[in-house]
Length: 126
Length: 503
Picture 1 (cartoon, rainbow over the protein chains, first blue to last red):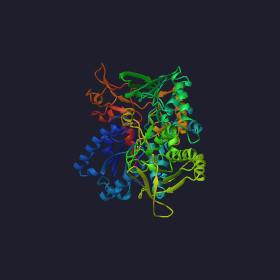
Picture 2: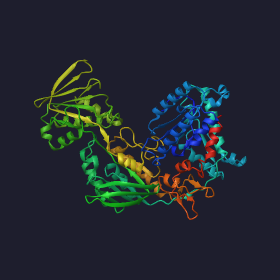
Picture 3: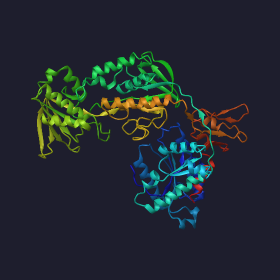
Picture 4: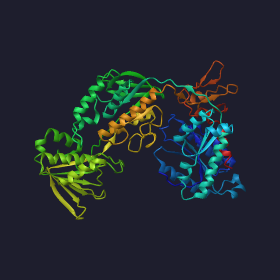
């Protein structure tokens, strides 16, 4: 389909969102990501039965932690897509990029943010 | 590549190119040829994830490509060689659905010498083909179907279970177990098999529009087919017939084009003309697509005086029933004004809707599109495979099709399934979870988390994961509070390295 979306994401492949560890979500912010997106299969359609439900809980927990430390929980989000929803994927990247642009660079990056103004890290399943 | 690996004594390889889905297996073969473990390979997908989707921002795309390569290299440096265990493949196939597609797939597999079990939920075989008397080319369907069913039933490698409902499905490629309830007695049967062919079909939409069900001469295409077969003398009396296309297709409820109804309308229009050349046939369409060589039949219909009038979905034709006298009003696309004509019959070209497979799709974990049709692994590269290995797809379960197309696809699916069964050198992926017994506290989180019930507390009082059963999803590894479970090839440091290298 080659649908265009902003070049702001870097995709990290995992076997299932069930493998997306809360540590990795937080690590991304520690290193300087402005936002993290977790993209899993539709709820109820997990190839491994319920990996995406575990991911959902972890993303929720990560949001709470980000709120607590003042980074803002809205910088991390989970979306559920099927393999036939490329259009929605492109939309999500656009929406999330706009949201992160509104929020501005992550305070974690501090001075380094100026050097590299764009770039939200994304995590996506295979 | 093999030469370069040997010449420079490389111990890892990173390829920055396209999608690993198609090319990783190829490069992994190269690794093996060069004497390296195939898991010491990593791909950066700078095409699908970059050049294709950022065409208008080349500079930013180049920066992203550099990042993707950097990430791949970071992970590659931490990859470990993995061993794969041999996979045993149960030499038996299950075909779900006993229509033309399922029967052809079963016959092909049986002829290849594989034991095959056909599961049909109805009490008789044949599916939709029972409702079609002849093809647009004039071929007799019933005679073909009877012959096909006879060959399947008498085949010494094929067993047919009618009234069979799939209620359970477990296992992995080469080693599936399907639970079925069979017959009026609903007796339970468990079948161990190596491959599955899904051929669950589709059905004709039951219209709610155009007064369907309120007049015996408002009928669907399939009903017209039966009528012309059984009551041709009565049909010969008809003065004028209108056919309405795209009923229950290309709308909000079913966005799919049903694909086969255009040729259906042309086929029945020609049949009506054959029964009585004086019968006026009017086909009201949105877009006529008699694809491939069927265009000849469309031309033939025009030559025989069949009228084609285009309508706008915003201004639908209106069917009226005045005390049993049928008429239709539509906006003529040339005159741009309403035209009303009395009619003897209204034929609704009702779309092909996927059969209800919600439960089956969830049991087999198979993807379906918004209209309920199953989705193949890749439209061009793996058109009859599912993404889950060992499961194959054919017939109208995939999309609306003509009988000839269902047969061709069934042959393709059976040939892919047969190739899978015949390959005795297959292995189980090395991507599995492992517990570090030294640090395991036997807290039972993994035991409770695993969707397949694989982790067990062993005699040493620590969790143990049987790699032959592990599916490698990694859910246990991410839940383990002590972080003592690692999924090989997706270990924590390998993922962290990818993130860290970006900043």
